[in-house]
Length: 306
Ligand code: NCD
Image 1: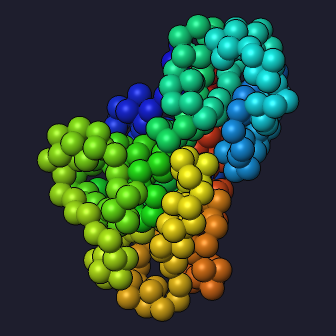
Image 2: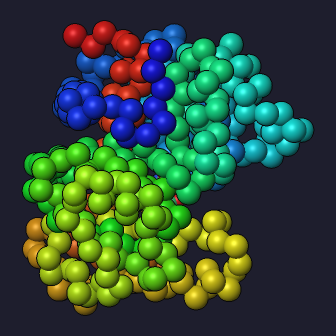
C-alpha cells in the first residue's frame, strides 16, 4: 500500500505516468466515471481549505465514488483530545483512502504509519503540499508543454509557503530548470530547501527582493500568499502582507508567454486586473487540480484503468 507524503514519493517516471493519466481523464472523462463506484474517500481537514478539500471530493465523485469527512478540527474528536493515530484507525473502517490536512508538520506521516488505507498529505503546516505540486506540474506541462528548460520565479512567502517547498523539490529533478526566489529577507526559503534541495542538486538559483528585477527573465511566475496563520505576531504579518502586488504595470515587464500561477487563495498579491491577462493561469490551475487528484486516487487505489 502506498501513501503520498511528498512529491518525491513518486519517481519522475511514475509522475509522468500520473500526469499522462490526468491528461487522458481531461480528454475522456466518461471513461473514468465509474471506476470508483462503491469506493469512499475521507477528507480529514484539521485546517481551513476550500480548493483542496473540494477538489478531492469532486475528484472522487467524478470517479463514481462517495465522500465523507470533516472540515475543521473543532468539528472532529480532535476537539476532545483524540490523537491523529486513533482517528485514522477509525477512518480506515469507514473509507478506502483518505486525504489529511493538519497544522502540524508530519501529522499525515504519523497517520500513514498506523493506517490500513492510503493516506494523502493534503498540506502539513509549513512543510509540504504534494497534491498542489501535482496540480502545478500538470498545469505547467499542459500549458507550457514541458517541465524542463524553464526559468521559474517563486514570489512571496517562501519561508512558510508549503506549496513552494514541494514544487521546488519536484522541479529540481528536471533538466535545466532555474529558480529565481523572490521574497523579503524575512521570508526566504528555509535553509533545508536552499542547501539540501537546490544546492545538493546543483541547481541554478538566485535570491532577489525586487519582483521587477526578475520578471523580464521568467517563463513562469508562481505567486504566493503571505501565510498569516504561521506568523508568531500580527505586526510582522501586517508589515509583510502587501510586500508584493502583481498588477498590470508589472505584467508589462514580463515576457508575452510567461505564465502566472498561484495555488490560491489570493489575498492582495495579485491585483484582480491581472485576471483577464491571457498569461494568468491560476483559475485554470484549479481545474487541473481535479484531474490530477482523480489520477492520484486511481493510482493509490490501484484501479485498473485500461
Ligand atoms: C495553499 C495551501 O493550503 O498551502 N492553498 C491550497 O491548498 N491551494 C496555499 C495557501 O494557503 O496560501
